[in-house]
Length: 256
Image (tube, rainbow, N blue to C red; front, top):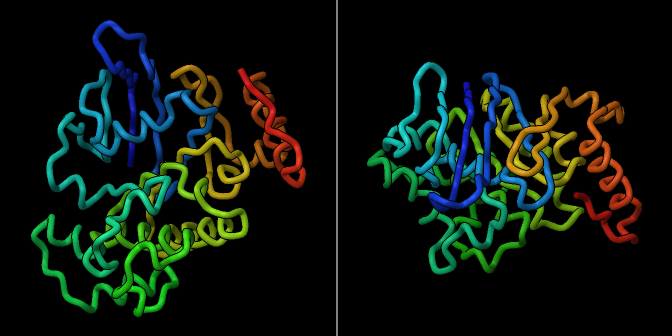
């Protein structure tokens, strides 16, 4: 479904690369994870795929076609993104109903009111939410709305940028389980970016580890769950994740 070949990104012509030589592929219906510490370039890769960054080197393919740097409107019917902060990604002065209809209006598609109820139901929210504003919802509810909005155009691919990191720990598992159910029910393909190995291990089939703008390791999720990783940087990430998970009473280990 997705193939990235030798991706390179610089934020200025004479600046050092933020992403360099990144290549990977994601099969249809698969969840592929990119993991690494903050600043490693993983979110930049996601933003290139989403068409938010148009100056890059290399090639990106969606199924059989090469994507141009400036994505055509039809691209956004097939690929949607869920951002890290659900409050920041929703307009504070628009009702949830207006925000769910926005993708349909942008694509000049019919937008029956029944679609709102169906969308909210698909993410486990009552229809009354349609008439509320983002500040009237909890963080988990806002992220469910963001997921529902991403699904309004019935895309093939969801790009997930740290979709649970802004949420309470008690809510994270609910959102991850929702994403798993939606992928299975709709045959979706996910590309998930996170610094949290527990999230990556829960949701992904395959994983690539980024460090300093490059992919330094890749493996099946079963290897991560079993703790059978070989690369020194991956082992350091796993050790840090285990320390952080011990009741969250100790500070995360600095890596790098």
